[in-house]
Structure formats: structure tokens, C-alpha cells
Length: 320
Ligand code: ADP
Ligand code: MG
Image (cartoon, rainbow, N blue to C red; front, top):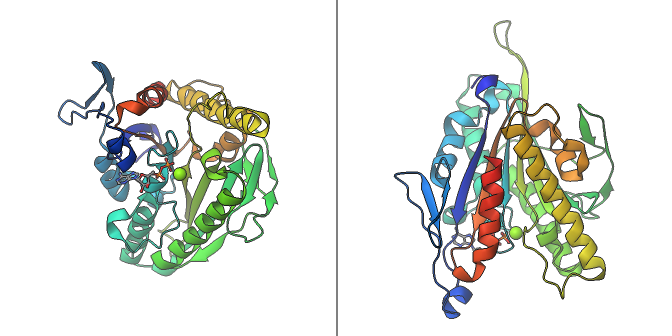
């Protein structure tokens, strides 16, 4: 993949109807038309998106996720709470042994190690992982039991999270162990702090470094950012009070800036408003530039969620 080919892809994934939707007699209002690539929604609203979910997974595991030539890749899961973001990314408290439930993170890390092992010099590679959460304007380390709050330093070009825990891993199992730790600390806080996870962005980072093994061989580094975004739902009036409202406003601001950043990248604008929110600041070097970005819109198929689904599809449509 050359720099000029780096791109943004938008993918839509509808989860199956859940028990509650079925019980409430909800009807399916989303359809996928694989052959034309068009996705009609409710009464003949059409949203054309380029590729299907499975193609992305396959594409990422093969040619596109080119961590081997020093490219960065970012996958963002967007959608209302309950739409399948966490399931899709694999950012749940799950040891990854259930293949059917395996999300994108375990699949990518598996593919990554397979490729490293297939090279002539696997020992030239170092893989480290981190996991953090962006909640309001704060960044928390998810690989530490005390969930310490971290500072973000940076300028227009570069942005770093100071003292973020980075753990070297040598195989899929090691990486999944760290993922499980991060998910565990995220979930633990959820019960303590009012369903915090639906209002926070969780980011799992895989950093790949390779040293040169000979004169003809070059060193490089690449970063994969796997992002389980905060729920995109509008807060109901009764909920939008006090702290909750401030959270809601913060989160919506982050998602709003993210859409502006993605739209600015998609239309090749000169100024990209990365610095206007914490989540876009910390992802700055992973969105645009030499990064390959996949925007995954997760939706419920039920008509009872049609308004939120429509909002999600419109958001995703703008990002194309
Ligand atoms: P979100 O992270 O967007 O709030 P979750 O990923 O937690 O949503 O999904 C909500 C529920 O739906 C979970 O119980 C999850 O197991 C289930 N689910 C989501 N996507 C799928 C899918 N593609 N197939 C089967 N079950 C799914
Ligand atoms: Mg979730």
C-alpha cells in the first residue's frame, strides 16, 4: 500500500435482533444488499457503503493492514449503546478462546503474530500493547489497577500520553491477557461509576517495531489503534441532568469533533481539527497521514431503534 492509496473506509454492521426487541414485537427495518453494495433503510432510504463487514475483516487480515511496511491503522466502532461495538471490537471481558465470539482485536493480533512468525527473523520484531480510556477530558490507563489519570502532551504534529503503560507481548495469548486486564478495569469502573463505559472511549493500541537485520533490510514501526467509541445515543431529557448532562455534552462533543475530523480527511481539507477534542488529539497520528482508517458503524436492526440507527447511518455517510 503506498501513501496515496491510504484511505478511509466506512462499514456498517447490524447485529441480530436481541431477545428484548423480539419480545417487544419489534420489526426488522434494515436490509443489506450485498450485490449492489447498497443498504436500504426503512421506507426506501438508501445508504450506499463500499464494503461488507466480512470483507473488511478479511482485507485487514491480508493486504490492507499493512503494519509490515510501517503504516498505521485505526479501526473505530461507532453506534448507540447496545448496537454491538464492544462485541465487534472484542473489547469485552472475554479470554478470546470462544472463536465464534472473537472480535476484531483478537483476530488482528492473531494475524499479526502469524505474519511475524512467517518472516525470516521474528526476533527483529517487538510488539507492545497499551489500553486507555477517554472519559470527558480525561485519559485513564486501563492496564493499571489504580486506573491512574494521565496527562496528554503535544502540539500540532505530535501528541503523547505521558506514562501510559506499554507491555511487551510475544504472542496472541500475552496480548489477550492485557486486553482482558484493560476490559476488566473498564467494566469494574462501569458498575462503580454509572455505566461509565457507554460514555467513554476505550482504545487498545498495538505497537509494532522492527529492527533492521541486514543492510538490505529496513527498520520500521507501526501502530494499530482499535477504538470502542462511546455510545452515540442522544440522552433522554430525564437523564440529561447534572453530571450526566455534562458527560453527555462532553461525549457528544468528542463524537462531533471526530466526525468533523473524519469529514475533513475524507474531503482532503488542509486544516484538520484534531486539537478540538481529547479523543481526536490522542488519535491524531493515527487518523489521516499515512494511516489506514476503518469506520465501523454498528446498528440495531429493530424498528424501535430506527431513529438512532438513522443518526448512525447519517454520521457514517458523512464520513465517506
Ligand atoms: P455496545 O458495545 O455497542 O454497547 P455490545 O457489543 O455490548 O454493544 O452488544 C450488545 C449485546 O448484543 C451484547 O449482549 C452482545 O453480545 C450482543 N451482540 C452484539 N453484536 C452481536 C452480533 N453481531 N452477534 C450476536 N450478538 C451480538
Ligand atoms: Mg460497549
